Image 1 (cartoon, rainbow, N blue to C red):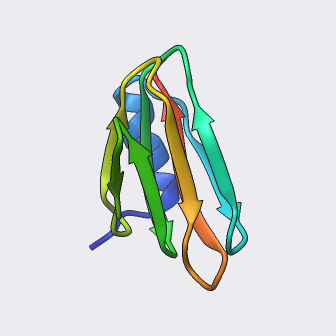
Image 2 (tube, rainbow, N blue to C red):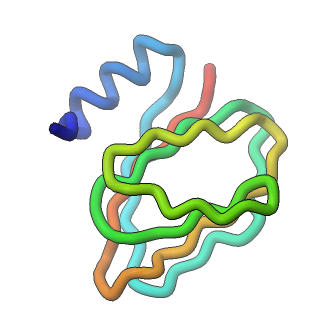
Image 3 (tube, rainbow, N blue to C red):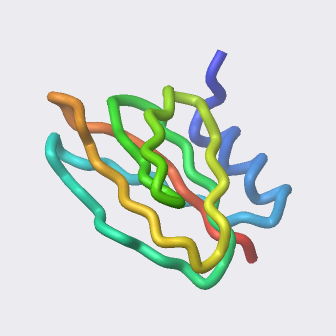
Length: 91
């Protein structure tokens, strides 16, 4: 069973991460983002790819992915509908 966004926010804050909720339309691509701190990412609804370290992942809703600081990554909405995902940065 997947946790609610509110519960996930609480859990991430307990682990020292911020929390933001995001929605993307079909076809949206975020190319080669790099952040100076560790990041956690989780798809809540929809279909995406996450390319990191030259490997393309197809995360399922509820699967948490950790992205190390200073690591380029690309997110694509590959579905036919809007997606919803969340991310947080280490404090």
